Image (cartoon, rainbow, N blue to C red; front, side, top):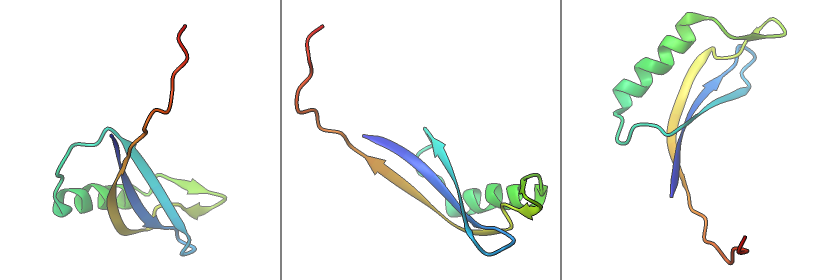
Amino acid sequence: MKKVLKLKFKTAENKNAVITVRYPKEDLSSDVVKAAMQKIVDADSFEKNGVKVYAKVVGANYYSTQSDDIFEEAE
């Protein structure tokens, strides 16, 4: 099973923005994740067409995906 961490933000125009982190540490606390996300907001380093991309912290979620093989061709 694969797991990713999705960090959810709002842009300066109140649109959704997401950063997806592959291979995140397990069991991160909300305080640790919020602090890291706030650093991204405070850095003010990401802009698109003059609009701040990560303006406000919204939330974070772990997402798990699983694939079940149906068949695999022999090489």
